[in-house]
Length: 164
Figure 1 (cartoon, rainbow, N blue to C red):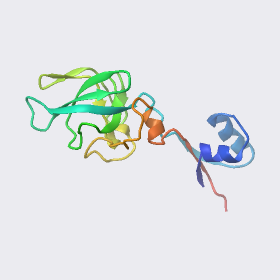
Figure 2 (figure 1 turned 60 degrees about the horizontal axis):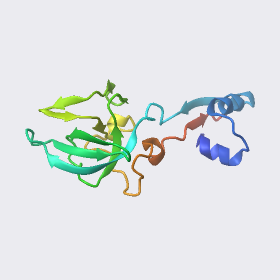
Figure 3 (figure 1 turned 45 degrees about the horizontal axis):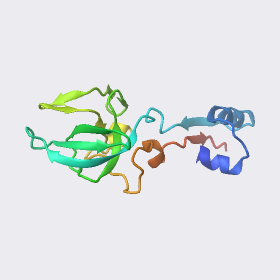
């Protein structure tokens, strides 16, 4: 049986953390098979809005995007076919570890244009194999908000073994 921590807390009057709850479930005789924290490692990614997107001067399949995160703007070279001005996506600033590709971002020059960070696909986030474009978030998503909250990845899943 699987359930989320938030669901369990709707039915329990507790402020205990995830580890304490998993331990207590085991103590009362329930076998906790796994705890999946889908947002682990994604805490530094935020909702970014593409303020403008222009054709890269030296590459047909790349765009130079200006991405706003609420209090900062970044120039990002992006090869996603769905990137467009006004779109909201998941932004990773320089220094971020990208779990799906196992790389740490650094400021780089891509075909003569500096890129400061990255707009991410689901594969780069490590949440699916989808990589045909960057994550296209709803327009209601608040710029600068944590991506794990907008994508509802901040609620761990607890799996309990069902005994016969």
